Amino acid sequence: VSDLLDKLRPVAERLALFGAGPTPFDTTIDAVLSPTEAVIDGRRVLMFGSNNYLGLTHHAEVLEAAALAARAWGAGTTGSRVANGSLALHAALEADFAACFGKRHAKVFTTGHQANQSLLTALCGPDDVLFLDGESHASIHDGARLSGATVIAFRHNDAGDLAKKLARLPPGRNRLVVIEGLYSTSGDIAPVAAIAAVAKEHGAYLAVDEAHSFGVLGQEGLGAAEGIDVDFIVGTFSKALGGVGGFVVSDHAALRMLHFTARAYLFTASGSPATIAAARAALGVVRREPALRERLRHNVRRWRSGLADLGLTLGTFESPIVPIILGAPEPAVAMWRRLLAAGLYVNLVLPPGCPLARAGLRTSVSAAHDDAAVDRALSLVEEAR
Ligand SMILES: Cc1ncc(COP(=O)(O)O)c(C=O)c1O
Image (cartoon, rainbow, N blue to C red; front, side, top):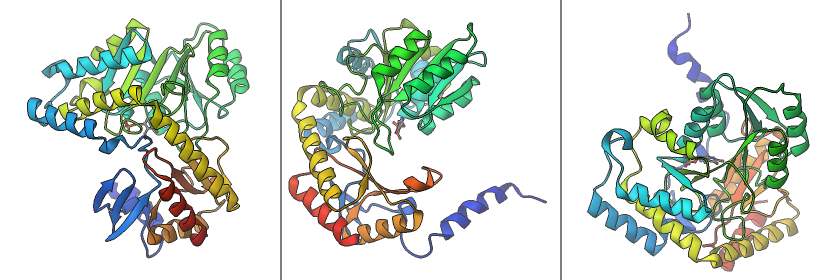
């Protein structure tokens, strides 16, 4: 006879396979010293495994805005905007996002995951068809599944495969294509212009999740879709903006209806005053300080060329997400542990989170790293290898 709790046993068994020693899955950070340094197990470690692309978690203006908002508005909102009211802070942040993207409408969500889930469940139902890139984030899959729409996957970053699959669909069914601007594990950048052209040709709406690309890609930091006509842009506050929350911008007035229909928005507490005010301040920094993106690009080039000189296999694209591909779980775990012990924190990427051949480390660069930090990290990788 099976027991309710049996299904969790394989999880414990899989964790046991790692044997003695730390894993990223249960690592505790004892103190955060700066956007690029933390204390783990009594040791100072350099962070090359966050999504803090611009270092804004510790920007003085962002911290000050958060502290002031908490004092003025309280620690939390205690409920949904629909039941308990929107704060003027929420409305101001939405106006800022709309202005920033030059779109008519913007909506903010408590997290980026909820932004994707809200958008997909509000737009799609069982009669509709969702075309998802093969490397889509879990929040996109979760939204797709909850919507009840038919899901058709197309080959990662392959506009030709998308065109073929869209062409095969009989007319009369509504269709939405969802891609990401910058893919979180591979660091691949989407061919947004090509995909937007294919979507338009086949009468499909297009949503681009710029979770990792907002603040990072594009002349103005708007993401991979900057300057391209896209129906819906999704983003998060939890990467370049250094906070917690999500947003969607669009010229479609229908976006406003998510306020009344999206369950992941309706039935959860809205972003706290501190998180909303911090995001507003961070957005201001992104718009005002293009030098941060320039610094980030400099660091990406220095980090990638140093790793390439060590003979390591990296991801294809020049982006702040730099995978080191080792091709099997065992060397990945061994190298992750050696790096942590030496004082460098990176991310471990294992199947089923990636194909076996792509097992390895995910490293990421921040504008807050200086040359000395990049060079120190390179020497730690060289020793650990
Ligand atoms: C592509 C993508 N979309 C959405 C999210 C969810 O963002 P959040 O952390 O704000 O829930 C993430 C973050 O993990 C992501 O990588």
